[in-house]
Length: 90
View 1 (cartoon, rainbow, N blue to C red):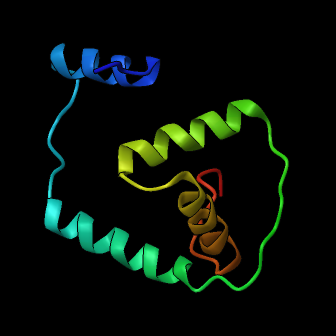
View 2: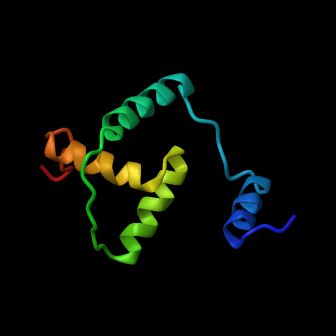
Protein backbone atom coordinates (compact mmCIF):
# COMPACT_ATOMS: atom_id res chain seq x y z
CA UNK A 1 0.00 0.00 0.00
CA UNK A 2 1.37 3.40 -0.99
CA UNK A 3 0.76 6.31 1.30
CA UNK A 4 0.57 9.93 0.25
CA UNK A 5 2.97 12.44 1.77
CA UNK A 6 0.23 13.68 4.08
CA UNK A 7 -0.66 10.13 5.16
CA UNK A 8 3.01 9.41 5.90
CA UNK A 9 3.25 12.55 8.04
CA UNK A 10 0.14 11.54 9.97
CA UNK A 11 1.45 8.01 10.50
CA UNK A 12 4.80 9.33 11.72
CA UNK A 13 3.11 11.71 14.16
CA UNK A 14 0.99 8.85 15.54
CA UNK A 15 4.06 6.65 15.92
CA UNK A 16 5.87 9.46 17.77
CA UNK A 17 2.98 9.70 20.24
CA UNK A 18 2.02 13.22 19.21
CA UNK A 19 -1.71 12.42 19.27
CA UNK A 20 -3.87 12.58 22.36
CA UNK A 21 -7.40 11.52 23.20
CA UNK A 22 -10.15 14.08 23.07
CA UNK A 23 -11.58 14.97 26.48
CA UNK A 24 -15.33 14.67 26.72
CA UNK A 25 -15.56 12.81 23.41
CA UNK A 26 -19.34 12.30 23.53
CA UNK A 27 -19.90 15.99 24.25
CA UNK A 28 -17.53 17.00 21.43
CA UNK A 29 -19.28 14.66 18.98
CA UNK A 30 -22.66 16.17 19.88
CA UNK A 31 -21.24 19.68 19.55
CA UNK A 32 -19.97 19.06 16.03
CA UNK A 33 -23.13 17.25 15.03
CA UNK A 34 -24.99 20.45 15.89
CA UNK A 35 -22.50 22.47 13.83
CA UNK A 36 -22.97 20.08 10.93
CA UNK A 37 -26.77 20.29 11.17
CA UNK A 38 -26.55 24.06 11.12
CA UNK A 39 -24.34 24.10 8.06
CA UNK A 40 -26.12 21.28 6.20
CA UNK A 41 -28.99 23.51 5.20
CA UNK A 42 -27.12 25.03 2.32
CA UNK A 43 -29.04 26.59 -0.50
CA UNK A 44 -26.46 28.94 -1.99
CA UNK A 45 -23.03 28.35 -3.44
CA UNK A 46 -20.24 30.92 -3.28
CA UNK A 47 -16.68 31.14 -4.43
CA UNK A 48 -14.19 32.79 -2.14
CA UNK A 49 -10.56 33.73 -2.51
CA UNK A 50 -8.28 33.52 0.51
CA UNK A 51 -4.60 33.25 1.13
CA UNK A 52 -3.07 29.81 0.83
CA UNK A 53 -1.80 30.15 4.40
CA UNK A 54 -5.34 30.72 5.72
CA UNK A 55 -6.69 27.79 3.70
CA UNK A 56 -3.96 25.47 5.00
CA UNK A 57 -4.71 26.60 8.55
CA UNK A 58 -8.42 25.93 8.05
CA UNK A 59 -7.59 22.49 6.68
CA UNK A 60 -5.36 21.70 9.69
CA UNK A 61 -8.01 22.84 12.17
CA UNK A 62 -10.68 20.87 10.34
CA UNK A 63 -8.49 17.75 10.40
CA UNK A 64 -7.97 18.18 14.15
CA UNK A 65 -11.74 18.42 14.61
CA UNK A 66 -12.65 15.66 12.18
CA UNK A 67 -14.58 17.95 9.87
CA UNK A 68 -14.39 18.76 6.18
CA UNK A 69 -12.65 22.12 5.90
CA UNK A 70 -15.56 23.61 3.94
CA UNK A 71 -17.87 22.75 6.83
CA UNK A 72 -15.51 24.44 9.28
CA UNK A 73 -15.32 27.59 7.13
CA UNK A 74 -19.11 27.64 6.83
CA UNK A 75 -19.43 27.18 10.60
CA UNK A 76 -17.05 30.07 11.32
CA UNK A 77 -18.96 32.33 8.92
CA UNK A 78 -22.27 31.31 10.48
CA UNK A 79 -20.98 32.02 13.99
CA UNK A 80 -19.74 35.43 12.87
CA UNK A 81 -22.94 36.58 11.22
CA UNK A 82 -25.08 35.22 14.08
CA UNK A 83 -22.99 37.05 16.69
CA UNK A 84 -21.54 33.93 18.33
CA UNK A 85 -17.96 34.55 17.22
CA UNK A 86 -16.32 36.94 19.65
CA UNK A 87 -13.09 38.84 19.01
CA UNK A 88 -10.59 38.10 21.80
CA UNK A 89 -9.37 41.71 21.69
CA UNK A 90 -12.84 43.03 22.58
